[in-house]
Amino acid sequence: MNTIKPLKSASSLLMLLLVLAGCSVAPIYQKAEVTTPAAYKEVQANSNWKEAQPSEEVARGDWWKIFADDSLNEMESQAMAANQNLKAAAARLKQSRALRQDARAGLLPQVNAGLGANRGRAAPASQGLPENARMPTSTTYNAQLGASYELDLFGRVASSIDAATADTQKNEALFQSVQLALQADVAQAYFLLRELDAEQALYAATVELRSKTLKLVQTRFNEGDISELDLARAKAELATAQSESLGLARSRAVAEHALAVLLGKTPAEFNFLPRPLSRIVVNVPAGLPSALLERRPDIAAAERSMAAANARTGVARSAFFPRLDITGSAGYASASLGDLLNWSSRTFLLGPLLSMPLFDGGRRQASVDRAGAVYEEDVANYRQTVLNAFREVEDNLADLRILRDQTQAQDNAVQAAERAAKLSHVQYREGSVSYLNVIDADRTVLQQQRIAAQLDGARARSAVSLIRALGGGWDSRSPAVATIKHVQVANAE
Image (cartoon, rainbow, N blue to C red):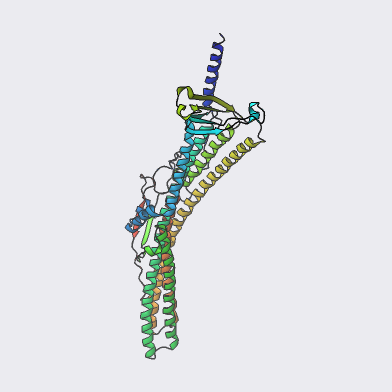
């Protein structure tokens, strides 16, 4: 009976420890609630609302192909392969995956082997001998295999793994965010460059027109029909157009260099041939606001950051509970190297260690408080990220709507300015108006045409910004529609 009681006690203790190993003191994670409108302010309300599900791992697709531009497609591929910021984000993702693997190693026993020798001499006093006693010097050889394992009683290891897993998922979403940002930056830089090319083309045509006008004025001056004042004004207008054209060339060079860096090249390695921008009209379905929580990688990253902070709260709480480590070692120890592996030289050590700090001056509570505060910060950051996402979508929807109307009004302004310029040239040849009327009319045409070109560029870049704000890509059941119109703006003659 005396033998059975200890066995029952040991079995009960083992069962209790196994039950505790399945416990966790981490708080149950619940995604923070956010206010989601039924529809965007800028689009008609849609009643087909569905609950948002996390989908940060979903591929965003080659959304830039909606513009049907082979040059843009090629540049996007180059950027994805060579951009250094994207490579840095990929390296950060590898780091987080390695940390997750490091955390998972806590679920398995740690085994190590050792081989060594100790040579020493004990102090006489430690053996109860006189101080002048002679103590022999001895050598001990050891060969051991050790193992240790933490029984995860209150979920410390499991919570650490959950936190590392959430961090990895966050970095995966951040990688998607950097990738999407790069794709959008390349597209916007590309359209900006082509917009500047369109303005350069306008100035080239203007310089040619004013050169012809100067010849006409020079002929009339030589014939004595006009004063030198008109001639000086014509020369000034030509020089002004040439100067402004050079200013655009400077801006274009800077834009070209910026695009080269996005593609992972030095400016010396990249040369973009002039290609004026044609009018691009892209209709991108905004979808439901609830879908934005699924599509935006930065929202997914903020949500995963919350999950990681919640898990680390569990790690901090587990410090208040006992920790059980089981350690053991087995091997050989001998005073002679030749006898090291003899059966009689074997040694072993096995035993659990249950530990728990009794007083730490409030350190553990401070860790719990800090973990809770970090979680609260991440909740606020998540909600702010969602608000910013809705604002960005609404901003770009409003931009596209207003730019569409503004472009129509600007087309009318261009047509009216061109008509006025033609009439002023005819009247000047007939001598019914002064040359100042011609100058003002020509300036107005150039100004209105340049504004039209800038609006075309703004519409293309706003379309890119909207796609980026929506998280890239779109539901295949609501395909985006791209309509590309080639608009030729004639100069006044």
